[in-house]
Length: 322
Image (tube, rainbow, N blue to C red; front, top):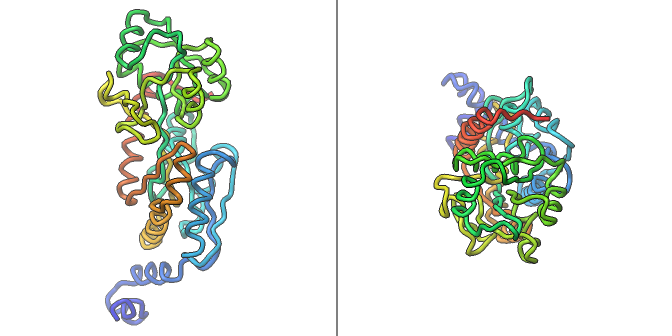
């Protein structure tokens, strides 16, 4: 009965709650048309997560939810400038908050221009070495790097990529110098690691798992703060020689800033239902991810923490996107 009263125009005017009534009515009608989830290129982790969410929430929300793929960071700008009405959402990861630190004149700010809905998944990176390198633990690697400053190398994808920043964070925290060899992608770097042209790398678990299993590379540790079921019995870098270390590929879902709180809350509830589904967890696990799920406030706090951590790494290493 109270909900009916607050949406009555005369009572809204009487209690001076026009804005509250408008938001309530808008949220009550939502969604009244299809929703789109914008994300990066087809086939990647963000695309697969987007499609699982779209399929999962379409029926319950009574509207079609479609995934729209865009190549490059233009997708972030697209959502940042979209109407704040809950009909255009974004699934993405670190590029949303690191790109403004890597380039000048990036037309969005991860905190100012987006309303967090929920974290969705995490994919640990794994510290791996060529079998010829005489190390079997994080402590071994740090000791060798200190004994041979500037002689070891690691491969990564482009400047500011997860595999690049994981290496820079490692060097900064361990106080070692390891030479970075940049590649256009992780695939070519992995080929050279297997071939012995590289000595170590920080690829995602999904990328490197087959090569670890075949013995072509040696796994040392995972990069998440906590151990992961994606790599049973594998220690974390933090627990095996470099306390406090944490780096991983985090994905989340966001809306344009100023999207009504009631709509954000509805979307959060629906997304969490999908992420907590055993079927979703299993599909994501086989991709090398683990589902997360959070409140909007928790995800927002994570984004701010990521900005602070990686901003320091980027500034100290003088990293610029190429």
